[in-house]
Each structure stands twice: as structure tokens, then as C-alpha cells.
Image (tube, rainbow, N blue to C red; front, side, top):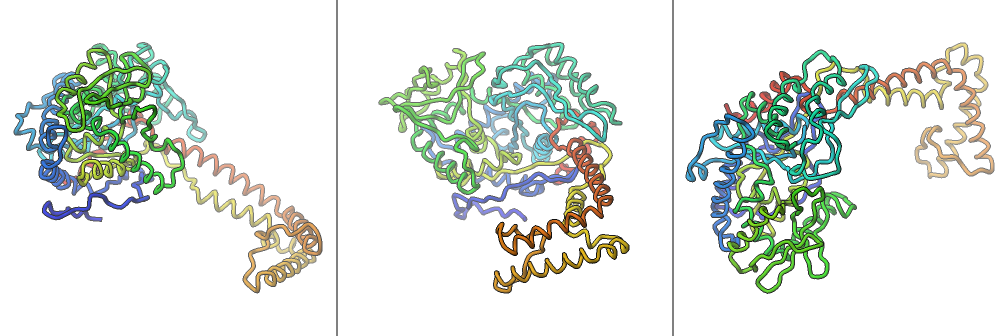
Length: 579
């Protein structure tokens, strides 16, 4: 459906209606889905930018207005991302922009954890880069290193083509769950041999995996930094640049130390009771609309206890593995911050007070090794309001950002800027397996037919030999249907195979048991056909199981051949209309 942009002069509703309809990943190899169309993305970004500039001037944020906070944030985000990218990608030639040039630029932003993700996630980076190039803008990838690293393995299909399995191949030693930001390489030998071990497990499939080109860059970077997140990000960014994608990289850990972000944080803390009420109200509506019963999905409510109110952040100390919740209490003109066990900051802040002094206190946390970081909704809330002109989501992020839209509308009184949802399916380049789910269903129907209606499939000689038994069955079925029709007031009766078992007494029960016996005896006459079908069903199910392994869309991108990935990314990017 074409996108209609609301003119800036008209009144746009603050909120669009909730919807249970969400974008779904395509099933076909080489297919992608974008909502709205990629050809509309640049216009949408420019529309968002002008709307935020026009409407943001009237929205107060602790002594600033949203428009000025946004101009400030874009400058600081660009400069920080340029510095970080220069460290991750030696020789990066991203030009320095003046404040005026940054203000005029269009920011296209995406983000994901620094893990080895699948092509349906990676496609966002390529589209962000193409949009930025076509729209004379800035492409930026947020490296979400504030999330938890839950595994140091990737899934690799292995074994014979007909009977494959999935192996877990580690790129580093296992460890307890910890933030990506804290994750360091533990077993260097394991890390450096990852490419070799993956290719051994995968086996010779007739192509060269991207990992052979990708992983040496990770190893090279590991000689300068022991950070897992940085090593994986550096390798990914290096290959993107070889494909002409020149996005800036900014870890969320760095974003959370920038002064404009801390100013925004102070605003949420100063108005936390109202923010929490809106946050929880929106979350409850989401659950109701989507039929979610869990109290922790998609995220838990923000709680309160003993005068402390939970805030939408996480906190931990350098070297810790456990992210803790952040609790806030207002005392006169100060706001106290706690991790649930001990206080870690006092901010001179109140709802009607300028945030500058609170920001100075928050800036001191890093020197004390205290990591104050966003949660997922808070990350996109700040990104979409304060520096992105168009945020590019995957399917999961887009689904949950229906909540962010409403938080923006209800807390800031501003219609949320639109975002782009993008995902894709790319399969490993292997021969197709002929079996389909329809084949299994067909065979199951045929086996059921043989169980209940073998008389319809007997050879002529066998049918003649057992004619009396067949006639008796037809008579009993007619009697059963007549009884059922009378019971249901003359309505059509279901086939005899679907009739429920009658009460265990009387003529009806005797008739039912006799029909069971006749069907069993007739089914014995088609035993050879049944065995053939059961063997075909077994083979079909084995092929479907093999197909499920080989056609999984969520294998790490590094398992694919570089040529297929690049052709696919070019194909998707061509839909943006940019050069």
C-alpha cells in the first residue's frame, strides 16, 4: 500500500490504532519484505526530520526544547560515531562535517547486537548505507552491546545431505551470561581456530563460506582489543566496506555516555511517575491486543516498592556479569538512584529544574566504573526522537515499537516519527529437497482412507470375494447415518469415520463395534498398499526433516557464500531507487 505523508500543516492524530497484524518474514529464498516500500524511505525520513524540527520547539526537556536537544544530539552522536568507527575500521575516510552540515544531513539508523546474525538482519545495514548515500545523509549502526551475551556459539548444519543435524560451534569459551560490553575473549586458540572448525563441521557443500574472508579481520582486530563485541563489529564493518557500505558504528555503551543522552535521561527520571504510568499502561494494552498472558512479555512492567520507582534503565559495575534494575526516589530537590541494594547516585533534579547539574553528576558515573545503560524501548525512544530521521527496524523491533509510538505520543504529546520495517530470507545455496508438507498431508489422508474405507480400494477379485462383508458394512453405515440424522433433526451427518463412539450399551454400541471389526478385517486386505504408503510417509518425513535443517533462514551470515550475499543485498538496495 502506498505511503501517504500527512502535510505538516494538518493535524495528525497522536496515535494510530493498535493492530495485531505484524510484518512476517518471507518464506521464499531471496525474498524480502519492507513496510513501507523502500522507494518511499527517503521521503519518509525527510518528512520525519521536518516534522520533528517544527513540532519539537514546543516540547520542553528540562530547560531545553526537544528541537534544540535533537540538534545537539545529532552533532554529538555523529562525532562519537566517527571517532569509534575510525578505531574499528583503520583507514576509515568518513569526512568531518560542520555543525551546519550535520543539521542538514538525513540520518538513517539501524541497530542490533554485535553477534553473528543472519542475512535477514544484516540486510538492514546495507539498506541504511544505500539510503544514506542516495539521500546525502548519514548511515549509522547502533551496536547494542548493552544487551546480554547469552551464547558464544553458532549453529552449523552438518552431516549427510539426506540426514543432517545441527552442531553448535563455539567462537570462544562458554561463560555465564553477561553484557556484551563486558565480554572479553577467553580462549584465544578457540577464537582463532573458529573459521577452520566451522568449515570442517559444515563440510564441502560446493561453495566457499564468507567466514573464510570475514574471520581473519576479527582475528586481526583481536590483536588490538580483547573485546568480543569490537572484534565481531570490526570484521562485519570491514566486509561491508568492501561492498561499498560505509555506515558509522556507535556502541550503545558509548551513546549512553554522551551529554545529550544524559540530559534526556534526566528528563525521564525527573518525570518518572508519569512516564512509568504511561509505560505500564501501554504495555498492558499491547498484551491485551496481542493476546499475551505473560506478565514479562514482551518486557516486564516497571515496578515500585517502598517509595522506590523502577526506571527504564539497567546498571552494573565494570566487570560484573549481572545487569541490575535501576530504582529512583525523589527527595525534595534531589533524585536518588539505586540498583536495588545500594544507592549509586544523587542528582540535583526535580520536575521543574534544569538538567545541567544532574548531567554533571551522571557524567561522573563512568569514572567510578558504573554503567548506566538503556533498555531496548528506551534506546529506540531516544534514537527516534533525538537523532534518527528514519529508524530501520527488523520484525521484532517493529512489533514492540508500537509501544514506543504510544509512549512518545502520551509522554511528549507528539505524533511519533514513522519507522521502516525490513526483513529478508536467504537460504544456503544447496540443492532443493523435493518433499513438501502437502506430500505428508496427502499420505496421511490416504492412510486414513485405507483405515476406514479399504473397501473402496480393493482389487475387483478381492471385492467380489468379500462382497457380503462389504454389503454388511454399507448397511450398518446407512443405519448409523439414519439414526444420527434423526437425532440431529434431519441435518447432514458426518462420514462414519468421524462419528464419535456411542454409549457403551444398546444397539448403537453393538453396531459401532461391528463396524470397527469390519473395517479392521477389510484393512488387512490392503496391508501391502498400507506398507507402501507408510514407507513413503517415512521417507517424506525424513526429507522434510532434512529440508528443515538446510532451509533454516537463521544461520549466521558468515556461513553463506560472499557472492550470493552481495547479489542479494544489491537486489534489495536497488528497490530504494538510490544509486
